[in-house]
Image (cartoon, rainbow, N blue to C red; front, side, top):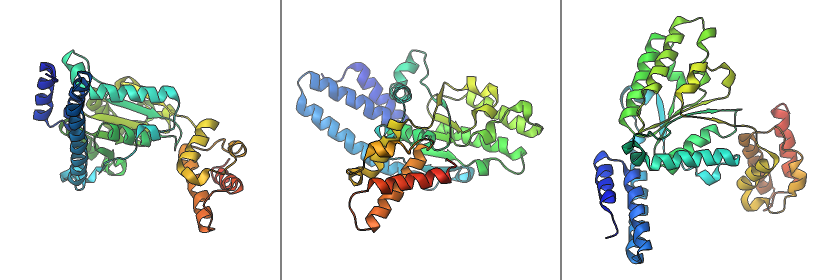
Length: 322
């Protein structure tokens, strides 16, 4: 028999809880075991069924999230992300940390059965455009989850007394609907209480600290900030993992440019280009590649010239203050 008793129990449990990702993960484990036992046809058919199921459930998720209901509709922007882990250009240790998060989430029931919670509260800090928001999208995609981005403009009401109530609405959704929840530009909410003269603002932060400390492990909550230094110190110990982002190295910068240009960059002299990438973020480099590509295509060419790319880099560096 290809499926063990533990596999069968895990399948029933994940199906009963509506956890499609866990269900498919266990099914793939069964397929892998079948393949090792020589049941290759069964393994292939089961993998195909999983792929088909994932595609259908993904489409269903998009449809279901198109119109968030109630008060939550005003507080979040919901989408299904297409960003994959191999698309994220980052240092090896950061990529390795994200792989661990994904692995723990995929096997979270096994961990929870033994008294351990998977990583589910992440703080991402670093300069703008260095991949923090994309990381949230990658985790959502790799785990087949919806990405719900919190609208801080709607959350931070001009009537400060309403904000704590809205926070409660968000965290009730976190507990009831498994997804990746992103608090982008989190410093607007998590500023240092010691330097805050508004008593209500301190109470809002205290409410967030309480909510996230008591958060269950089913959903993933991500806070992203460009200004670590102004965050309240009490925040850091509430997160399971703090990841630091930085401007890309030369090699990472070239990887970003090459990835966005694709075949359009086949004739670029990358050694020359490398001299002009310093100080630009991942997001700015993507814009540079797009600018050079569009100019090239509109000129009737099929390959970006080195000079065109260098010029786009110089213009962008000037705009960025470089």
